[in-house]
Image (tube, rainbow, N blue to C red; front, side):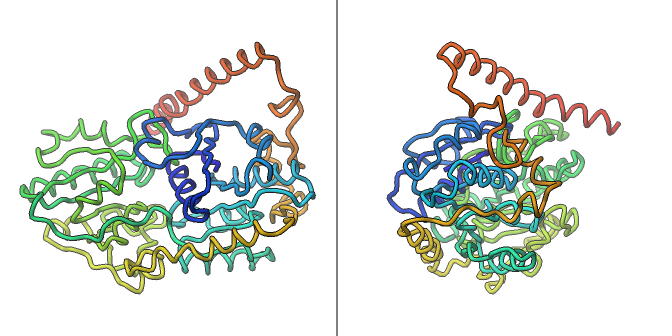
Length: 427
């Protein structure tokens, strides 16, 4: 299983367990800007038989049928496309290759066509709901691409005990934040002030601000305005019954009575358990925020309404369409994916990997995607890249040290320096 961030590791590893129960899971973390830290991996709470960082070149060197039966590509769309072309080149038309599986880690509310076409070519493209499966097939068929690989399932991390109120703890409101939505400091400060205000208005409640990462860590998206720093600027600080928390989302939901978010996938986890869930409208219902996805859900609400005691009630027809209906059918949601993978594994040979994007269909787009991962336009490793002749032990050690130093400098630049420069440019 190849992943490039903490959330994609969570989706990919759990997906692998769902579609191949009992199989050995080898975890490969793609080295880059968002490579998860040990703390982030521990917080996700998913284990693998082995876990190590690799480059794209290292992955392509070893990803054959003799090494793996199934490869789950849990990465951003461009990386999936590059790996598919790299595998196509390295494996050729022999027919002996692993089954390739990919999909999305949560709600698909932007770049639908772009992301889908970058994932085309995988043997299985998982759709997390009936709604997504219909949209995915429509996009593929609309451009004349084969839609046979689209398989409906559900998000692999749904579960947990159904919601029940408890008299043994305070009524708990959880504000699940997101690293990139909203983006501006003013909007994020506003949401944090409202969460603190809700705590002051309801001193008998506990308000938890569920954070995704610590300052300096990366997730799938860059977080330029961490809530930890914004909390320190709130006049008077956070009230005693409002605090910042980390941890596994499932464990946080175990003690949640009301989940509040802008558009986090945590809303789907909450709805699956039957927890009252509010998708905030304070900043508008906009595609840029992703909360437009929840139109028709019955969950849209403002902090003013929540302060006044509103408890949103989700529309059951909407949740069923989104694959999160808590009706006991969740475990069966992966049957079709398991059957598809089993059928492919049983074949003596698989057809060549044939993505929609080729030098004929996207000559001005595909080469750039491949180049970012060290591949030439044919999908072959570029001359002088890491896929060349093995280096000596000393050369490998030197190369590794230089690479690690460069990676540290790059991450520091992306995480610390670049946001400062962007903020200065806004002055």
